[in-house]
Length: 131
Length: 374
Image 1: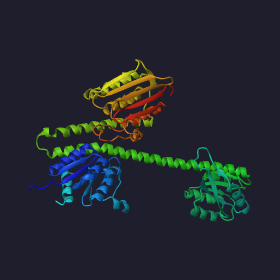
Image 2: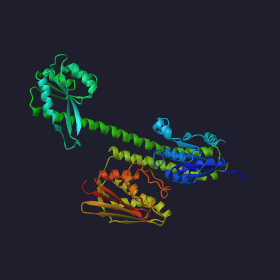
Image 3: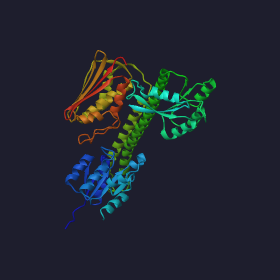
Image 4: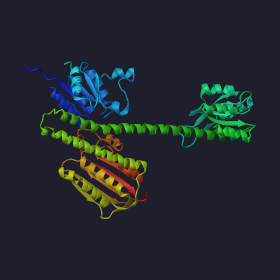
């Protein structure tokens, strides 16, 4: 019997980032669904429970990824969330570790810098999916 | 009502209570201030006491007598100056000499009031010192705000510049690892997307250059009689390939030789932005109508499209730097988010106005009026 493919949700407002991650993650043997805005991401999360969610940080809002992460964790506490961002390098801002208050509501399991090597990304995804 | 703390330093109780009486119900207001200022008086008998109060109560103004029992007023002033205490000092003294006045001014005293003074003289001095403090505060606030704006601009800019680099780098990595096999044809879309992103980045850099030139005022403007009809035709010509692909017809309603005293480059930027937007945000088989009309005191440029239109809340954001209206209808349209911001900057150079009317799924009309006298 065929095992059901794991489902990965990718939300990013850059269509090329979506295409690349979709390509890489499909190659790992996973099913991929995508959304190109926080709003569309929220809509998908309403009715779909992915096995892993990957969010870009800056979309319509500069903290869209955090908002999606928060909402996803609230609805599906067991679905791991990865936030991919270039924010640290751009603004020098470190997030997630700024204050206790923030740590409490930003509940991504893994932060990844944009431009990460393919094999690293694939390793992190496997780790979060406990494969 | 805002309150300023005034520290009165004088060993004569009569002077202290006199000042207290004069300022108790006195307020200062100017048309440019949102709030009037009133005064709260703190009294000190000696210079030593004054230093303590300066430390603990952070007054805004000090009325300072020079001849005091312990340390002199001028020494209090020197202390303030040396420790960069943020307070405006007014010397009040009966033993005024040129020497003291020079020394006080050299140490940063704001002004000098000789004793005895009339209530009117004191009030006039307080008015000028209040105005000074208010302007100082506003200057500081504005400097801080412009710094914040600059930071915001730079962080968005770096994001916009880095996104295409990340995208192209990603495609190159996939190609470098031969992740889609050995056949170059299987990478065609990735190559095309990379080229598209490079073009987008080039456009962004060109727009950035336009924007810096306009905002820094460094661009040499040449105002001469420019034929807007001709400029419009040039803009149409450069967007035509895209219009043909999507079967969009562009119509120009304007008299030959519609002259307007302006900088040709600036007029080109306006027309290029509006006409290319009208085509980009249009539908297949759509229409773009451009009209240039000579009104009584201004010239009117109207660019109307039959495109996707936009919601009211989007219109409000439209002219800000890097704003792009993102929704399912616009997701395949490329742009830098700077075109309309630049257009608005130019329109303002001519003391003109830009108006937007838009109905979702019906179309958008941009109307620019530029006065002949600018």
